[in-house]
Image 1 (tube, one colour):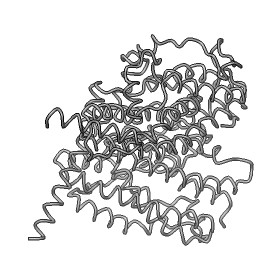
Image 2 (cartoon, chains in turn cyan, orange):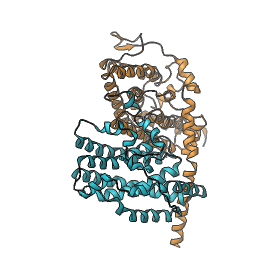
Image 3 (tube, one colour):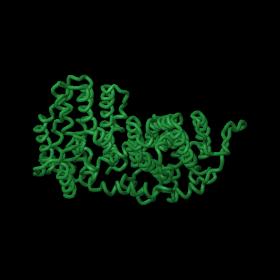
Image 4 (spheres, chains in turn purple, brown):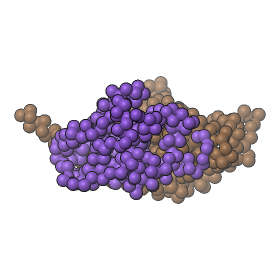
Length: 252
Length: 318
């Protein structure tokens, strides 16, 4: 039987991805390769943070103990964040930013397309709204994968390097935690294992057009969904949480 | 064209401006008008883009999700302003690449206020309240300036700026009504940003080299000193309302003039910052130059890809 706690953790699993990716993208604001891309990346960060707020507000309501969206966003310890390793990877260069985004967007859209059928009305509504936004994200990142892959020799090399480094984080997207299983049984959550085939197909289609390849690797990284993150995560959180930790219990 | 013909064109041009007609990109204009407008519009565009940096400094550390989203949206608006101002400037026959080049080599200036650091969250409130507040006072008259593309860009910019100004003041209200630490943070930010905000309205009339010509072309409708007085008169009561104190012991209401009297502005500091010796001049410029240089391979890729797509289309057509 699904417990309230399972559902809250399930929501964290989705929302933390949006928060952490939104945080990574917002680091870039003002530093993009052109004004147009700067504005587009900021738009995606805004969409993701908007989604984060909807999920956390709902989680806070389910917790019913007076916690707010900000308590959830800012006052957990690193081990309690359930985002996948992929989204916390640093903005090494624009090729990494786009590849990370593309790998996540393809998954994100598939997830929301399923989540909109959830028996939970709130999650279904958040998913429906998100689909419009994430369809744009996927189009943006796919277009850029093609530009970078089939652009110049240098851009192809740089983007292939990003793919080679980031592909190992994609398998984790399709892992089910105990909470995920309970929430799926209750017909509220999505069985992400069923999305993998379509995911691989979509990624492959775009990469082929971009003259890029998926590396042959046998070992994939995992851990984020259990709250075991990369060493990058602590630094990201120390920025994110700085104000709330330094000035506890204040209104902003 | 003979001197007489040029003189004639100039006369017609001046009459059009006197009648409040808009000058459009394809219209004849004196070379000096074109140059002055490139200088001012590009300086304005650069200020928007460089202005993203001090505020961008706090996006990842904003204290709540609501504030983070609002700040991100605000900084994005500034990128948008930069975009339409660069476009307006391009109508005068200069490319965006040339404009960037002028910024990156230090030939073009941007608003000096952005060379001060944002060291606490309250600085984000102070910038919205004071810097955007002063910017609006500078910019509202430009909505009816003589050059059409600039005037139209300014109408959009001003609408968004007044929203930013309220947002900044709202951050300050929250801090001023908060804990003693928050109030102290707000007062400290006001102390640091007040004088640079006054300087933002430009050198005193006696020192301002461009004022006379700019007034004639309606590129300016009030003098720097008039605008500064307007800003002070408007802002002091806002500080009073939330219990913050302006860092100026000479500031007091003058019944006779109906304005606030205020203390001396440290113009040495202003000129030092203009000359490049502000606390963050180097950081700001190098952040822009880095973004541009590190983005070169990305822009090249986009161009190369577009060219390949064009060739493919051509081949198909044949």
